[in-house]
Image 1 (tube, rainbow, N blue to C red):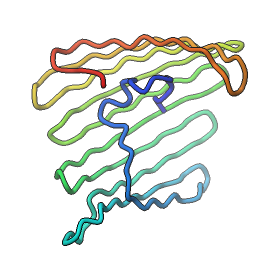
Image 2: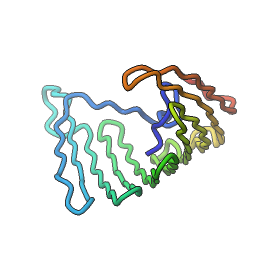
Image 3: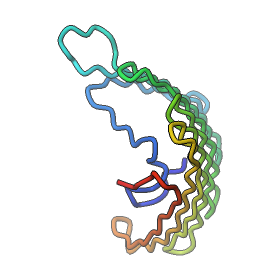
Length: 170
């Protein structure tokens, strides 16, 4: 819903982009716009007989509207969290908002808007993370412009900024 920027350093990846290896995932068929996923991840370490992580996700799509919710439990770090997202994509305008809470790590929200005209797309985003360990609020903002040369080629420029003493983009 909010992953609209081309850069891998977009703020939507602050608490993730959790790519999960050694996992099994089931994706349900969509029934009247409602679908779900379940994931279990195991590292295959000898002597361990439990899952390292599991996730449950629900998504509802109806016309231009999308809503989703996810729960994630990481057994190896004893951390769990949830995410809720809402999105609208109608005509040339797209808007998205996500709210995420990860126990003993951070709480965040992130909103984006994009507008397409001709072969161009402009994007803007704002988010804030409240880091539990430092009790710091990190504000994030991004602006982007994209020009599509063809279906497979594009030129884009993005500016990503933030304020926060202890935060660095990788």
